[in-house]
Image (cartoon, rainbow, N blue to C red):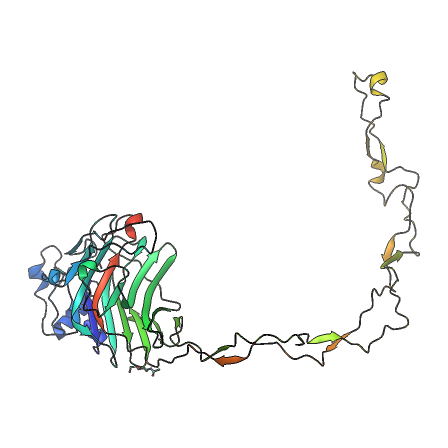
Length: 426
Ligand SMILES: *[C@@H]1O[C@H](CO)[C@@H](O)[C@H](O)[C@H]1NC(C)=O
């Protein structure tokens, strides 16, 4: 993982990645720090370039060089499990090492989650607080899920500037300004972009979640995640330099930054005499004289005649000619033996047997119950809606992009305890 937090910096200049060896070389060359001859330095893979720290400047830039432990401190606090019985302490270990798969550069290291079935939390303080007010904020880092990802987050939290933040005490409940990056568990897979917004009236913070967040690619190669927020409240999310989402802080988050200016008046109720019905039965209409409500639906078809092949004298059923009186039948005890009946086979190939009656047919004079036709209701007042009043909780923040100053970056890896251990390289 390499972090770059740049207020006002150009994002592309920070594109330095393992799988982008070519670009990385170019960028580094542009920076006047051409990597050493790869053939000389890498006997195993002759084409592999060697990592050289960038000379780029940004308010915070991390390449996990040898002095990383001066900046990064693991937390040993208790996890805030929001009142549940579970108790967890952050005791997972972190290390900085080269990737175990798809290595793109000699000596290019990242931060790795090390302890199986443990909760991990780590943070690094910024040299001085980053205040994005009026500037473009760029947050960029690489994720390498070198063991895949069943269930877990690889997102960052930019913590609210807080003099009292003790890194050993940092937890999932520590106040943050922005949460950004991939998170996957089961079917849920998203690149989070959440920001905390302070309600200027109440002083309370509320999390604003990006609608229709993009999907994270779960691959073992390096993915570069970039978030850019402009002072005009527009934002861009890129994955490997490609735009995957763009929008506005004012329009694309739930709940919305600004509450509605007007709300329904809770004191307004529908008047008792409000007329809701848009259509009514015409009061002027009268049942026509010749409308016979009693005419039956069906009548006997008087014109029908008996089909010629109808066998009037044949019964519908006959005693089964194949049935035999059981040998142990006792007439005295069991009564007279009567053979079971079967359908008369003579009726199979003709229209019918037995007495013939005229069938029923639909009555052409059937009208049913008369009802008046519907007309527009002259008293109709429309759909009732409560009157609107000014929202007493209304405020308008025109520049949510003026995030609060940020003091540190953190990463938590706490969910993979349920699944196979990921030594993920982020
Ligand atoms: C917002 O600002 C950015 C950077 O200056 C610009 O590229 C973009 O077009 C602006 N968007 C709107 C909607 O004004």
